[in-house]
Amino acid sequence: MSGLTSKIEEIIDTTQDSDAHDDSDVEEHDDDAQAQQEPSSSTSSKKKKKKRSKAAKALSALTGRSIPQALVNQVLDTVKAEGGAGSEEANAENVRQALEHMKIMDVVKGKAGVGGINKKDMGEHKFWSTQPVPQMGEGPPEADGYIEPSKPAEEVRQEPYPLPKDFEWTLIDINDPQQVVEVYELLSHNYVEDDDATFRFKYSAEFLQWALQVPGYSKEWHVGVRVKSNKKLVGFISGVPMLLRVRKHSFMSAEINYLCVHKKLRSKRLAPVLIKEVTRQIHLKGIFQAIYTAGVVVPTPVSTTQYQHRNLNVSKLVEIQFSFVPRNMTLARMIRVNQLQSKLQIPGIREMTEKDVPQITELYTKYMQRFDMVPVMTAQEIKHQFLSGSGKAGTGDKWRHNGQVVWAYVVENKDTHKITDFVSFYSLPSTVINHSKHAMLEAAYLHYYASDIAFTENADANGALKERLQALIGDALIVANNAKFDVFNALTMMDNELFLRELRFATGNGFLNFYLYNWRTAPLAGLKAENGVPVGRGIGVVMV
Image 1 (cartoon, one colour):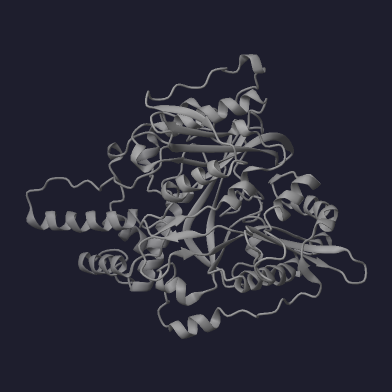
Image 2 (image 1 turned 180 degrees about the vertical axis):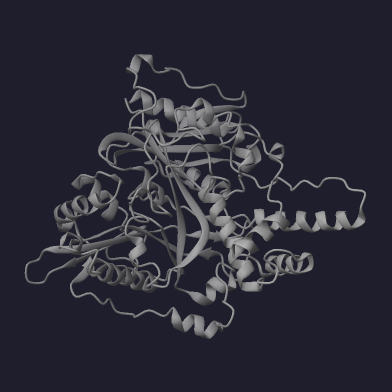
């Protein structure tokens, strides 16, 4: 395979023209960079370069979806025609594997990410080079700690950062229904979508209230930008407080999320100013560290995780081209192998209630000690995470309440009434853009879970924890399927490696990078093991 990969790398010039990007670093990431073609006097050379350019463009747009068969065929034909090392072993399957490997390794090595950012683009980061974050090329730190010391409140900038003359700052009141509508409309039309512009996250008002009104939140951390003339909301960023443990250190931080600028204003460089303004507001509260995630690679990820997808509504997923029928399999067989039981399998499993909060808090706290970076949560925060988004009781049906955004189930020992396990997931649908039949992709995302099996002797070594988690997440899949979700998503984090393959999760092409602001630590185990820590167990923070 190494010979074939080298041959494909030789054929596909994946270097893009970084000058085609507006070097705003944190602006929403357009994929307009084109592969350069050098002028040539030879007709055959021109044809070859044209071939390479088409392949390069196709490869650069792959992140977030399957390798197209047309690209596999194109690369295979070129490999066979040119001969040389690796050409004899080439067939459609190993060409596809080689292309997947190249994509994965590019992201792991910091050369590429969702949005098409590559190594050349990483050369100069005008914004991030001014921020207290580890810079590209720095080795692991000798010790964990802050990059810049905290400041007293009087030394923090007191005035908002200046905006272009046509815009003004606004603070968003999440308790005001009209303002919540403004935020979810901005996000629904302008936030994250895949490279094909096929799917776009569709946030609900209930979701935003659940995500942004955590205990102790500050309304000053929900920052917006409006057009002065008509007061239209065109930019947004949020922060919520989180007590974060990174290895042996615990500190208050801000979880930064939902950075969004209206599509028509992405040349105005509003995103860096939004980041600086929310940072200023957070500093005024005496907090100088933050955690955030992105599909793109900027300086410098502390860990990279990869998306995993478990098909539930197979027919719909194939129709909207979220999933594809594998070679040597029919749609009917694909549906059959992904079928789930209709009834929950673990004795004593039921929906979580408020009376479970004290036991869940204790179980969560103990279980999360297994991971290197986790939120430290109080009982009040546990109640919010797992119950505040559970919808209107007595409405909807058994599996989905009206307005529900989070599902939480516990396993109770019928004799002792001890809670031995819990599992949760949340709903984040996506709009299916311009599809004649389906308007929405109903996606469930794995949230937090725990099992006291982990505390028994040799639970990892003897497979007891693996077996229990397969049963626990298996029941979560049944709940999601009964609640009419189309797909169940997870990341390569926590103990997920113990059940992903066995429960028929498929590896996706999307990656999520984790970042720490004003904090240095050695890389954390996510997609790959780090410093003896197994895959996934460096990351225990679920960013919704």
